[in-house]
Length: 171
Image (cartoon, rainbow, N blue to C red):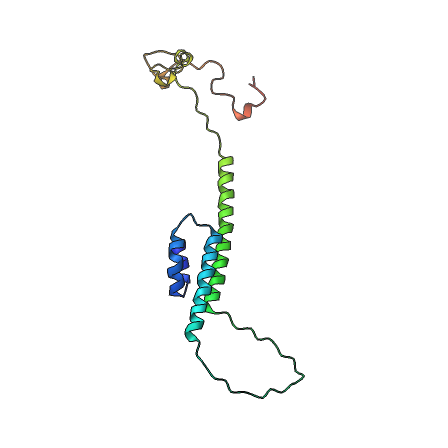
């Protein structure tokens, strides 16, 4: 998706062709990608300057000295520079997203509740460490039925105290 976004954002076909192998490489760092983009953009501007450069003979003009301040006129940014600035902003946004995703992943892995899986099997099979293969009633140990059909009440507080019973059993 990022390759498509960058390639459609570039107006110059030659820069797009120069960057395509770098963008397809998933192991390339952002700094290296920006460096290649800058090199490609500068070579493209040089090429355009050479192409449009024509030999023009300028006539000599008389220059008069005046006391007016000369204001420096900045050239408007070229479309290539605008797209380069846009890409820089996009890359900064991607870096921020990468940091946010890492923080979210860290918080998810840290806050994951520990699941408790109770021991399986009847008391005899648990003591022999073969509870996973037990075919007896988990409550009384009988081989005639399973725990859901057992009529014997569990001894003591087998399931643990309820949350409302934090102070102990009430009588």
